[in-house]
Structures are given as C-alpha cells and as structure tokens.
Image 1: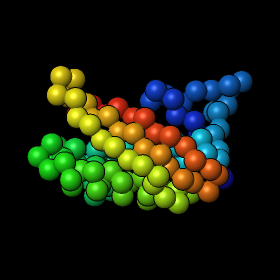
Image 2: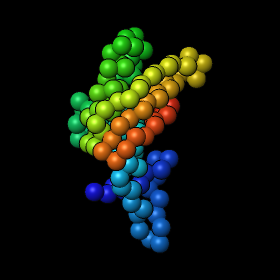
Image 3: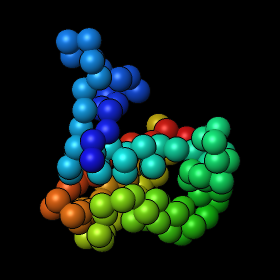
Length: 114
C-alpha cells in the first residue's frame, strides 16, 4: 500500500505527480499525522484527535491517549519505549517513541505546539 508524501504540511511533486511513500516511511507519516491531529479538528470525525488542552491538566490521560494513537496506526505492532515532556517556555510537547512495525523498528521524535 502507498500513500502521498506530506512534508512540512505540503504535498511535494516530482515531474508533475505526487511523491508516494510506502513501507516503514508510510507508517511513520501516519503516526506523525495522528500525533498532530488535535481533538475535534478533523472535519469528517470530530471524535478523532488528541486533547492536548485537557492533557495540560492531566498528563497521565494525555500519555495514554498518545500511546493509543500510535498503537492505532495500521502496521504498528507495539511500543518499545515512550516518553513525553512539556516545555513550558515554548509551550510544546516533545514526544519520543520507539515503535515496532511490520516492517521493522522506527523512532519517532515529534514536537507538538499547543
């Protein structure tokens, strides 16, 4: 299965066509999209996404929600490690995770501004 590459919120093109991504890169892209989808932001399903605002008050809930988003991506088999830290100066969550997929292991290092 293949997906269209999204890079820096853009869809790059090569020779007039979209660039495709597949395998472990596709799974990584899906994880990053899941972690950057804020609760109620997706027009087609308002129940999707992570409630980072509530997570500022309840970090355990947020950690559980982020782990579930990662594990809910098709092709992800398990989490090897997971950590979240909130930077109060920049108001950003820094999420790092080791993820086991059907294609092998990958590392996620994602910064999310709230």
